[in-house]
Amino acid sequence: MEEYRVLLADDEEEIRMGISRKLDWSSLGFVLVGEAGNGEEALELAEQLHPDVVLTDIKMPFLDGLELCRRLRQSLPGAKLVVFSGFDDFEYARQAVSMGVSEYILKPINAAELSQVLTKLRVQLDKQRLERRDMETLRRRYEESLPVLRELFYTRLLSGQLRPEQVQDRAARYEIDLPAGLWIAALLHVDAAGEGEDTDRDELLLLSVRSFLEEHFSLEGASARVVLYGDAAALLVLLSGRDRLYPLLEELERLSLLSRSYLGVPLAAGVGLPCQGPEELHRSVEGARSALDYRALTGGGRVSYIDDLEPQSSADLSFEEEDQRALSAAIKLGPPERAEQVVRQLMERLSQTGLSLSQCHLFLLEVVTCLVRLTRSGGVSVEEVFGKKFTGAVSISDFSSLEELGRWLRERCLRLHELLGRQRTDSAWRMVELAKEYIAENYTDEHLSVEALCSHIHLSPTYFSTLFKREVGMSFTAYVTQVRMDEAVRLLRETDEKTYRIAEQTGYSDPNYFSYVFKRRFGVSPSKFRAGLKI
Image (cartoon, rainbow, N blue to C red):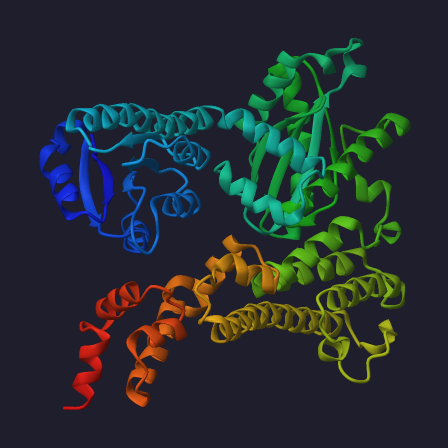
C-alpha cells in the first residue's frame, strides 16, 4: 500500500533529527518527505509537497505552529495536523482543537508515544482512502445502472425536459450516440380498438413491441433506436435525407401489418415532423402524439403523419423559452461553433415552415430582442454588436433571402460571443492589476495577506488565488515575496540604510527572517550582497 507523506516542522534541529531517526517510518506506513526549521518554510514546503500529515512545534520563529495550522486547514483541508508543545497550557490545547488539530503532544517527545499517534492517524487515513476507493465501487454501480439511466434520459429528451445544451453532454455521459442530422420520431402502440381489449396498457406486450421493432425495422438510408415512452414504443429514426421520409412511412405500414402475425395484434403509428438534431426530437414526438390523436378522431389508417393532418402553413414559429436558453448558453459559455449551430437550427426551422419572409418577421424580432438583452446584461455596447446605425428596428424586408438573414444573425452572435469572452478576460486582467497595485502600495505592511487584499477588491480568497496564479504564473505569497526582495535589492544598492531598517521598509518586522528569506532567494545575506556591490 502507498505510504503516507509526512512533513516535520520544528526550529530545534536536534528534535527534528531525533524524530527523523528514531521512528521506523516505513513500518508505520509513512515516509518523511520534508523538514522545516520555521513556520514560513513549513508553509511553503506544504504547498509543494502536499503532505498527508504535518508534525509541527507550537513555538517557532516567523510563523508559529498555531498560525501554520490555521493556514494549512485552508490550503490542505485533508491533512492531519499534530502539534508539539513544551507548555502544558489548556489555552494552547483549546486553540489547537478549534483549528482541527488531530493530536496535541507535550514535549519532550517520546518516540513510542509518537508512533502510537501515527498508527492512530494511519487508521483514519486508511479509512479515508477506502472511502475514496468506494467511489470506484459507486462508479461500477453507476455503470450497472446505465440501462435504467438511458431509459430515463430518453424519457426526459422526448418530454422536452432537457435543455438543448444538455442533450449531447448527457448522451455522452450515458454512452449514447446521438449524431447531428435529420431526425424524426414515430410513436407505435397496440391498436386496442382492433382487439376489443385494453392491451395497450400491457407492459409485457410493450416490451414485445420494442423487441419486434428492433428486430424487423429495416430501411436503407436510415438508422433507428426504440425506447419505451409512456404507453407506446417510440421509434427514433436518423434519416440520411428528406427523400427517406415517405419510404419510412411505407416501412411503418409494413411493420404494422407484420405485427399481426408476429405479435397477434396490429400496431398503430403516429409520425411527427422531421427535426434538425436530436435536441428537437421532443417536437417531433409532440407531432407524433397529435397524429395518433387525430387518428382516433378520424378513424384513419394504421400510419398517421402529422403533416398530412396539420399542414406546415400552420407551423408554430414562436421563439420559445428553451430557444432563448440555448442561444444564450451558446453565446455566453460555448465555443463559437456552438453559437453557429444554434443559429443554423433556428434558420432551418424557418426554412422548414415554408412561410414567406414577411411571415417570419415576428420570429426575427424575438431573436433580435434576445440578443439585445444578452448584449446589455453583459455590459457590452449595443453599437459594437449591431453597428452604429442600429436603432433596434430590424425588418425582415432588410434581407433578400433566409440565407442572408442567417448570415447576419450568425455574424451578430459570433461578434457578441467574442466581445463577452474578451470582457471576461479583461475583467480578470483588471482584477490582477488592482491586486498588483494594492501589493505595491502595501508590501511594507507585515500584515499584508490575501484576505486583506480580497476584502479590498471584493473577491473570495479561493477564487482570487486561482485567478492570480493563472494570470501571473505564481502564487500571491510568492509574488509578494518577489516584490519585497526587488525593493530590498534596490535599497541595498542605492542607500546606506541598515539591514534592519530595510527589513522594516519591505514588510519584515523580524530582521532575522528578512535575512533568511533574502539568502534563500539570492544565495547570500543582505550584508554580503551589499559588500559584493562594492568590489
